[in-house]
Image 1 (cartoon, helix red, strand yellow):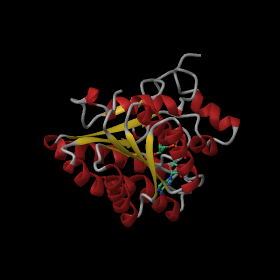
Image 2: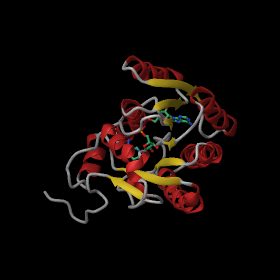
Image 3: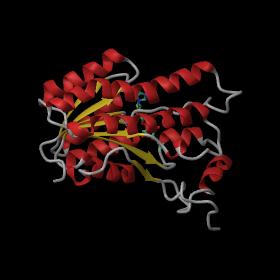
Length: 257
Ligand code: NAD
């Protein structure tokens, strides 16, 4: 088992990538703190972990709220006695996020609060807990869109993920000598509810697919496998990195027919 005796807190673990991470990390021996704003979905994931013999607890929290993020870390330590892995994964992609002229200020603020401030708050309260465990691994879910302009505009989302990458690098440098590694996972376009709700017409889907050398959307489970490497001690010399798991989308200039 690659995460034996470790405790992982995963935000946005009720669905998509976070859910797959929770199930996989539990299979690899970690105790899981399932954090989500959606209590029902989070509860279902806890049940799935427990019914397959793993350990998990549920914390309902809004990652953009300081009191909630402090409480989620407190509960992790109360339940499992320590924290080793912090995955700041919760994120939103607003359906009215467009270009700079069309995007409402409220959409910008909400996106920044969840996607960027949420990562900051997770680290603010999570890092002291990782220190108490003698170090650990932080994984911030960013996106390939932080590296390349997207064909379908989503200015607030893209800017928020760019901020996540910059913050990841800085925190990696600051905390390197405390044994705390900080890396960003950059998924490509995935077959998840989040993206499919945004790419809601066949035309929009094709506009994305045409840029992906592999010619398909990725699966959340493929992101969980990459995150497992960053979470485990196998990545002990990896910090401040942007782990692109994107079917080659950011490597491509022209994709094959
Ligand atoms: P998802 O919508 O399936 O899951 C996101 C989860 O986060 C949901 O369970 C939701 O309830 C929860 N959440 C939303 N707001 C929250 C809040 N304020 N506090 C706590 N929990 C909250 O999405 P996903 O595709 O699994 O996305 C996970 C992460 O991956 C996000 O950060 C997203 O931006 C990123 N990402 C997704 C894709 C993709 O194509 N799906 C690509 C690149 C990056």
